[in-house]
Length: 84
Image (cartoon, rainbow, N blue to C red; front, side):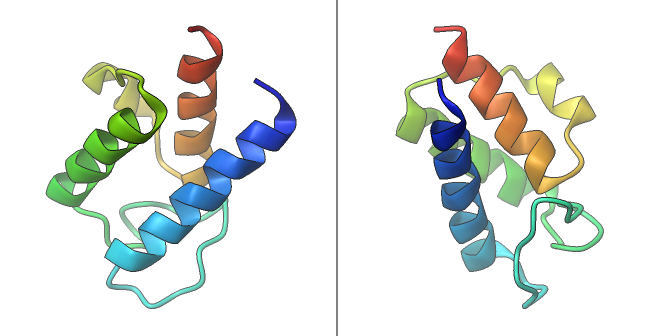
């Protein structure tokens, strides 16, 4: 997967997070999903299910323990997608 695909993943995530976040802030890669974007566990799991459907991947729940920012989530998706 190329860098442009990473950028596409990041853009798609940013758009989706903007629609489900209650913070009203513009989404940046450095933003913390929980503290800044108010993404709770249910919203996060719903987002992961959408990501899995969109990219035809499976995201292991234990892989989410290290995900704190939008960029972390984009990198995780990119890594999983690249390994297929």
